[in-house]
Image (cartoon, rainbow, N blue to C red; front, top):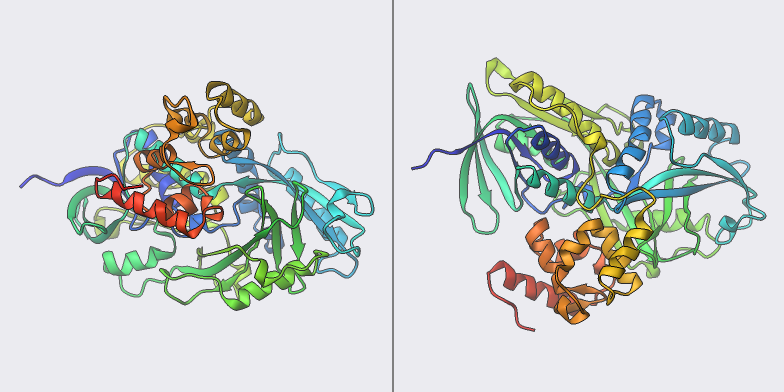
Length: 508
């Protein structure tokens, strides 16, 4: 019987933090194995509000270090992935007697502009809502607003691209692969994983184990590692609703609610408006996280306080919900729990080391990974130097203002693409859209159309390059074409992908 494969680092969890850690480590020369029991970004990392932001509201809770770090990351990440990350302006309407006085908002936005070394993003300005177009969809009670900068990210694609880059640098990435046991030795871990589709088991060894399982981090400690009573994370549910677009303005809105919480209303996928998020403690099954009726009512009511045309339940075309694994700092309210991350190293009795990752937010994933590598170096020795700050993610090899020219260039090379299709491909794949399209010279060469502008060539690329297995992986994580395909079309894609998974070509 062959000896188990040996790795330097074994990462549990295929969310943004796990994939970011795997990428950074692989790029420094460590051998890495990452196991994700479901799909990449199938948990928290595809259920965010999809913002690369400093966290304006965190200033109220004196989270200055976290906010500064996040603000600094906005432009770094934008340069890394200008196809899936771009700037967005936010309008914060103000009215007398609102939850926060004008001086507090001005002070917060002044700090926001100056705390993080902003260079490319435009500064805050005050709007006259009697004349500014931002007032058009709102009730007439707002006479003033503040407009500030943050960023937008296609969150689940950020995860996929980190995983792709990690694999390109030598990491082994396994999805639908669950860690069922991890035994600790003096020099290494012996880890048994199970393929969740075939049931096949495999054993590998690693010098160091990273637990980056997000909401499941305590489950891993208790079930796979045998640590009884682990409780380090506070599970907080955040839910969103998507409705047909409520406004044509490219800016997003930051709404302050009567209860002191905030929600965003954001232009989404060209034809929709995204509204969220909620904050409430979650005690249910992590595999069955769905929006509640109370959350739907809360988001509709909160947005309707601002929009002239109310947001009605029957308008909703999609909802999504995820659980944030916040570090349990004892905060009394879910919205007050820290969004900061905590990395806890455990080298009990001189045995093989374990590092647990608690908390964090999508904006600071790269910094979390760098901090993790500092701990890893201290435990198993250093390899390469930090490198990700000046790197690009797959497809991001163009300038931060180069998106439009990249679309134009793609259409020159593939003139059969219409403008909308080309823009979508560059948004998702950047320069790798050319690899996806390959030798295609006509629409016919793209293969079967599953609905909207989702063609077989794109589906096959996602299966071959980005670990997509099911229709849900394609429609709701790698793309958002689930918003546009009918049920029959989605069923057709599911049948086709089932055939690919079994090694046969599905019939038309």
